[in-house]
Every structure is written in C-alpha cells, then in structure tokens.
Image (cartoon, rainbow, N blue to C red):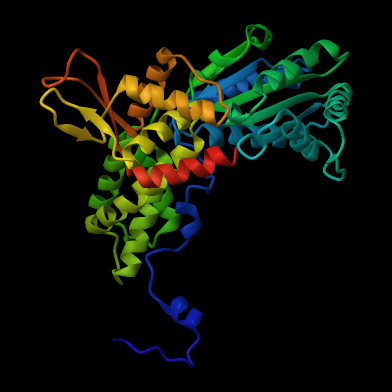
Length: 407
C-alpha cells in the first residue's frame, strides 16, 4: 500500500501528474468548434432561409430533426452566431433571436420568459402574467424587428399546441416585423401530435440531419485531437477504432468525442504516454452508459413511457410463457407491453397513444439500440412481436423515473 504524505498538497500531486492532454476542453461534447465538417449543406440551407430576415421579411418556420449527436444544435448556433456578427456590422438590419432549451423551459410561459430575457437582459418579467409577456414579445417585434426563436428539444414543451399556435398566429397581429420559429427535435413524428388547426398555421420547412459515418467521425476526431492532445499522443489505430465504434453504434459525433476523451483519461490513469486501442476499449463501457443515459433524457415523453413500461416489467421479472410451460424472463409479447404502457401512462395522467403509435415508438427505440425486437417462433401460439431491453433495466428505470416523476 502506498502511504500518502499528509504534508504534500493533494492538488499539487494531481497537477504534477503527466497527461496526454494539452487542452482537454476541446475534446468535450460541450465544446463548439469553429469548423463544422460535413454540415456545409445544412449551414447553407439554414442561412438561406434566415437571410430573408435581412430584407425585412419573416423567414419560413423551420423544423430540424435528427438523432442525438448529428450536429443539429451546434449547426444552428453556428449559423446564428454568423447572423449576429453580420447584424452587428449592419445596424440597419432589424433582426434579433433567442435560443431556448425546452427541456429546461418546458411551457409556453417559460419559453416567453426565456426569450424576453434575451431581448431585454436588464429587465425581469418573472411574476407577470402569460398575456403580459406575450404582448411584450409582440411589441418588441412590432418595432419592425424580425425575431427568430430557436426552440431546442421543442417536443418537450407541455402545452406545445398553444405555444406553436400563439407564435404562428402572432404574425397576424403585427403591423411590422415578424416572429419565426426554428424547432429542433430528435423525434421526427412529434408534429403528428399537434392539433390540425395548429399544423395549418405552421407553413414550415423541414430538414433531417443524417448520422455521421466512420470516415466522417474520424475526420471530426482528427480536428479535435490536434488541439486537445499532445502531438503524437494518440495512435492512429486508436483513432480509427474510436471512429468505427461510434459509427457502428449510432453515428453520434458526441459519442465519438466522449469516447476519445475517456480513452485519454484511461491513458492518464495508467500513466501511459500514448492513447492506445486498449484505452479506447476500456473507455467504451463508460461512454456507452453515458451516451445511453443522455439519450434517454432527451427522448420524447411517449417514448420514455414505452421504455419505462418495459424496464419495469423486466425489473419485476416478468416474461412470456411458452407452450411447453417454461418462461422466458425479460422478453415480452408486444400486446402485454402495450397494456403495461397503458397502465403506466394512465397512472401518470399522460395521454395514451394507440397500439399503432406504440409500435412506431418501439421501432424507433430499436434503432437507438434501447430495445430489441424479433418475431415469435416455435413454442409460441400465433405470430406476434417479442420485445426485450437492450440496456440495463435497473439503470433505465432509475433514469426514467427521474424524468417522468419530476416532469
């Protein structure tokens, strides 16, 4: 056992340790690089839509979809920073925007408050009525301004119908200026739940961000490695392995970046001078859990309910019975899973979707690797779909309870 010197400062000891990093920040998922590889087409398309505002006209509403880690938010923020820079140098252009994370600001009122805090940074509107803050937003636009509201994770808004309808119809009340929406979501189908009246007011354009492939992820990692790691500290084989693993799992750039970050930490932990394949493999388990938990937190509410129902059944040791009398724990008939979903959704006073939508959600969760489905075979009466979890049931249940019970 190594004895610690109580007279030595513990942080001095940590500071003196050798490391493979030069700037760890640039290999974290929260860092926004100046260059966004493989998103030039999306950048051009978004900037073209928003450029209408520079001519004093309201841009089209835009909805952007894609899995976690496909660059949706970072691309939009890059375009907005360019827009802000242009407007700062061209004072005659009356354009303003606000970014709202709807996971944190998940009601119409909270979205309005967050937007106003950007437009009026020196004023506090907490405590004012919803009607007041809405009118304040309209008055700001009525000065001839084109307002762009970026609603990230827009499907998390509880009264989404009311929010979208209010913002789209607000343009009918404005004598000058306008309000446009950029909605960002992981859920391609969330608009299908909107009221027909709301959808008819949207007049939106849509854009889907595809996952990155291994070649693209390698290029993204190469750019990050240049600033994050000491020269020559990352072996080429480790870089290739990290890119291949992330591409195979999800095509998630954030997952690839996290994998390389954790691999660097594993190298430091082993006092190695280089990041090797073995460090990437050691990091994989840690990253898989982090990415999965992050993904679960960002899932639409209905998909969370579906996943929670199946995780509950798994934890309780339920399963399906075969014709020979044996049981298969952790594997469920789709009908049984749907009935459990109905029960849980009702108990949480959430909308219960049809069995058709339930199957859609199951299929989408399977593409994320959170569920595994198969057609029933021998030993089962009739033909149906069997469902099982693709991740640790207890960890999923705990994470989902935190999301659903605090919503």
